[in-house]
Length: 195
Image 1 (tube, rainbow, N blue to C red):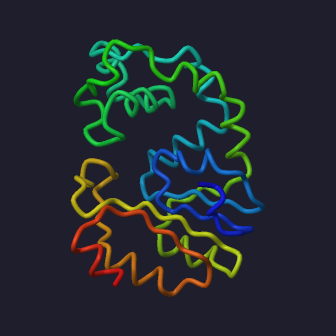
Image 2 (image 1 turned 45 degrees about the horizontal axis):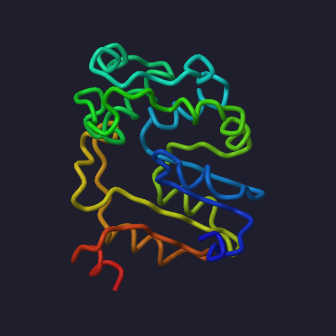
């Protein structure tokens, strides 16, 4: 897949969420990861300062652990909640069956120094996606957007709820000088917005 990446000196991911793509791709000169969720960006801030070292052995995915971390504010509590829930949707409310009974994140947490180093020079922001894109846009910018999908229950995912419709995303993307990739599911609302 990396063969298809555009050449870029600036990488902007304003809906970073779990950051899988950010952590997977090769770093460039300027990198921006953003999300309007304070707890997501707060988690990244804590993680890059070494806060995840306390949970290096991973988490036993069960209801006891889930109850223990349900309202916790530490980076380890947040990570455990996310890993056992559905990527934040209903986090702390139910246990994802695919993880039940397993020790999770043990291998990933053994690579903590790589994750810390990877995000050490990145800009972290809670600005709205349009303000982030505008601030870091330029001919050598690659904007990668993975916004909440039209049918996603976003009110449980983001602080205070966030609704970003495909038409709004498309309107902002058309104004950019850099290259824009948008990841969406195939829905009539999405096709109409980007046609």
